[in-house]
Length: 262
Image (tube, rainbow, N blue to C red; front, side):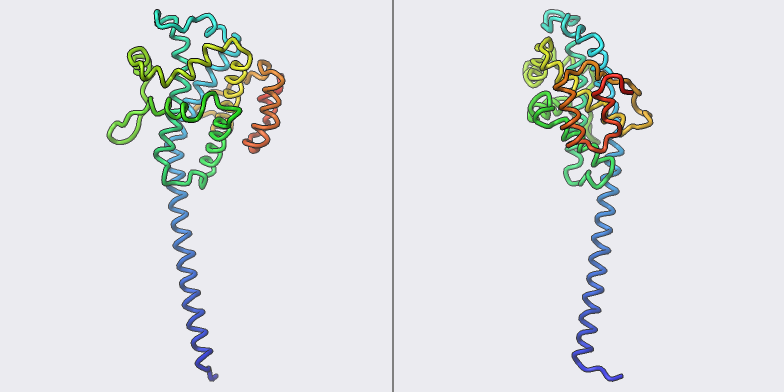
């Protein structure tokens, strides 16, 4: 069969384009696979401490909800006595510790797309729900500042300071207390229904995070919720905004806001 110059050139051109296209597709696939693998490894490394920190908050909020925050209300929150400060310090530390874990993940994932991993994507969606304007306890800037105030570099990576270190720093450093002050201010107003409900709703989202990302409860306790402590406004907020818009993948969301559900 005789081929003209145009046929030969066309075949060579299309063959070259095809090879380059296949090479590009393979390179891009390899790059994305490696990025996805790196994201998965990073999420796996951080998910344990994040879940454990969230679990501590959920346990504390459930305890406070059962007593209608009596433990905090009975405390003065003044510096004269460590005993009077302790109920506040424990709550402050648990939230600060959780935020520090989130900040460490942010710092170490700056060049990675955590959303390429299924667990990472869901974790990011939970974080967005927790940091939404009508959900967050304090402004994002203060929250991140509090989280970073607990972070130290240990030579090989980052670590969050212990409860003892936190307490010592809180009692001795005016600058450190200044960063913690926005959260402390909310605790000082916990006798107000609005502030109390904010804590309860925040805790519900963390509770759902734990039940979703640690479904078998290998790292956390399987605790009942506190839907009976939520007012109608909080129940609607969770039902129509949080679980419908931010967290549509959460299983049986009604158990978190409907009293009597398990």
